[in-house]
Image (cartoon, rainbow, N blue to C red; front, side, top):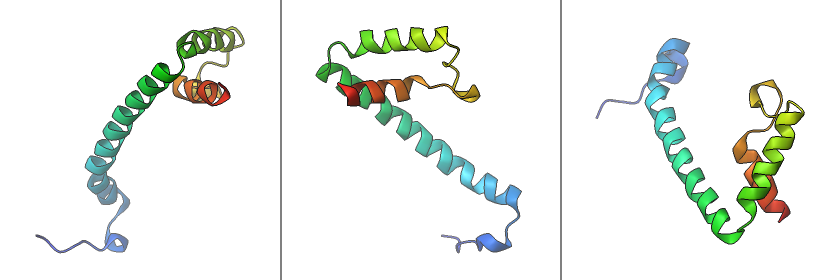
Length: 85
């Protein structure tokens, strides 16, 4: 096993290349766990899907459905709605 690299001596590009596989693995496992969480919430709250769809339509009507411009993403809507229920 190679000795650990001193992060302070690495340039930012090297650090990014070293971290890339780790970040990809984490985001994949987070995505999978998010899907399982949503499915669990749908089992617990049968009307969750219909309510979320209505909220998404209302947000789209008021142009608040784009997360990159200040709106809410679907996962946030599902979590907020399930918390409210």
